[in-house]
Length: 495
Image 1 (cartoon, one colour):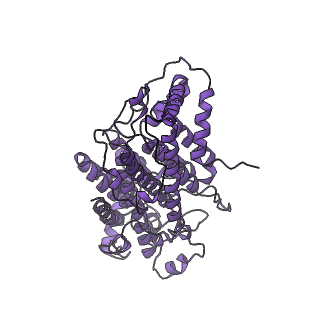
Image 2 (cartoon, rainbow, N blue to C red; image 1 turned 135 degrees about the vertical axis):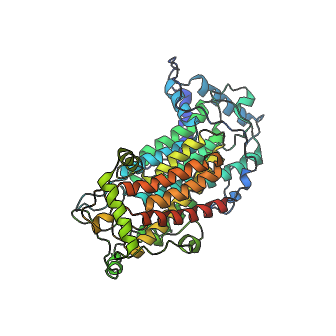
Image 3 (spheres, rainbow, N blue to C red; image 1 turned 90 degrees about the horizontal axis):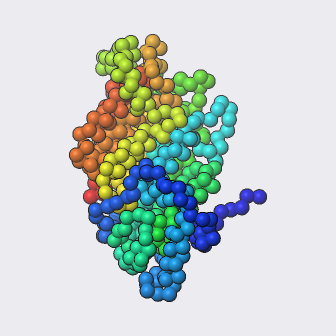
């Protein structure tokens, strides 16, 4: 029988105690880390008062009042930290460098890796395994959003207590830290908070990965002791807070209606029958479409604004001059596709086995963030606004797709030469255009010097689907309109 893992906060303590009896320190020099340790110019001291997404108030979550740094209890913890530092191994120093570059970003990377691993449709006749979800673009957008919101709300809570108790880090008590010292209060540990909340949320989304995620969370939290950056009670309190906040986010996820998006009753068929020249699956053999009821999933921002006006106009009828001009343009691209157009189509393809278009924009966000000096809290704020916009983009886009059931170009004209695989859902509007327009607007708000470049990237992402022969220009324009609207909603929330 498989033994259920200990709660993360308890296992932190077990592992920390074990460290006192760990093996000898190795003398192997640590190679240069992939990224430098996270540093910040502004500690965001008022972060505990920032607006939260799901939780009502940070003070709804309780941790013990910490002992003062001159108390005997703290001095004993300090000795434990010094012992851990003196016995630190090469493997532990590698782990310290890995997590010190930013826990929020590292867990975002882990989420992207899991999305890519599970972004595969089931084989023909193979039942869906709830332990191994299909990480399609809408699923991925939701996963990134839930993770980012969990991290953000948990860190706002942590900041509230950091500046309530103002406990200084062990480096102020004579511990030589492996990492640069900061003035950020150490209780509770922000790393332990992020580790616990990320593990809990991701293990619900990817149940088969529970053991892997659990061990990652333990390593993340324990690196703070190995580095001499925290004492045991800092880490324990962080684990407690992270678990408490995670339960709130998981409860939200259980009530957001995503589980019904796959449309087990196949109500989409009756809707499609009412549409002339409706989309049909081009899979061979044909499969049910992807998440026909995604449009009914709970939105992060105001539902009426996400799904309401301004809405993309209805696509042109197949007999109209507008449509003829559009499909002729797509056909011409297929007949004369350049190497540059092929490159662009492939670069933005984000298909099966990748971390999807929302994940692509998370990677872009990471690259922008790493050029700055932000706290974990500010990083989490940016990512939760980005990823809530991405999930709402998926909801709005999929609602439009299954409203019009617009056929793909290769369904209308079999002679169109596509360079990308045809997705198994209707054409109008383009998911790539919607995701990208929303993401570029949100990231451009936080990185104004890059805003023009980001918009160009979003336009290229939308055009890539036309270059690949699987979308029309009208799909692109409709998606861009919707994505920009949702990006503005996300920005307004942050203000």
